[in-house]
Length: 152
Figure (cartoon, rainbow, N blue to C red):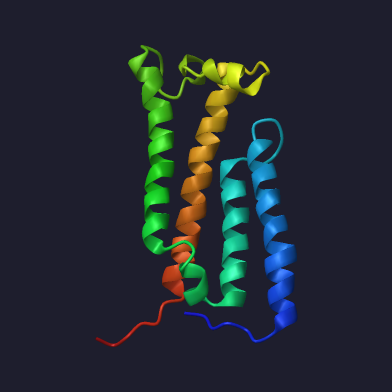
């Protein structure tokens, strides 16, 4: 468990300036991951670093009230589930595992208003699953490393 710092300036800079910028940059890396360097793993690590930074400055007790370890475990499971479903759905269509072109995501083109290939959408679905999994696992690791252990 970490304790909250008494510095008002540190809390302001981290909570108002750094953490929102880190989160936006992480989402940018996720969204542009299929066409440029980056992707789900990098974005998950960046966003997890932002949350860990917030927890370091505000104290773990305060940060855990917003997103608990139980929620993070569910998110980690959801990230793995998204990845597995994106691989199994093409198998059910009779093609290879993780063959993105077989994913039924044509509905997204009508919703988004522009044309994207099934392959691009499949890659994005995989990246979202990896992002959710990496983000939640890294924050869970931080939470467990900062727990106070007893000799019981």
